[in-house]
Length: 90
Picture 1 (cartoon, rainbow, N blue to C red):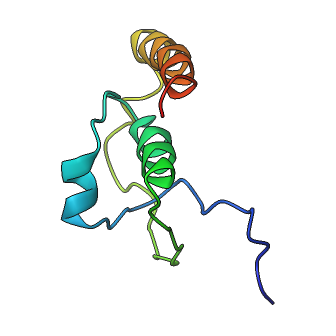
Picture 2 (cartoon, rainbow, N blue to C red):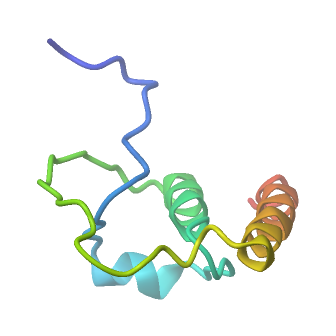
């Protein structure tokens, strides 16, 4: 079954991108929002994306650094800033 042309690829998991993409866009995000920023800026420059399944495994030890109040506040601030900046790019 063919995907509709307007559907965006998944924005989670591992990314493999050409080096020239990273050399041509300025990423400002410092959290997981870098995925949204990279995708948006690359699409504006004409890059195409494909999604491939990569098997992942649940964390066996340690804890997530994402779920603490300071990190959540940082991500929220970055999302607002990113949303504003992406409205004003060419």
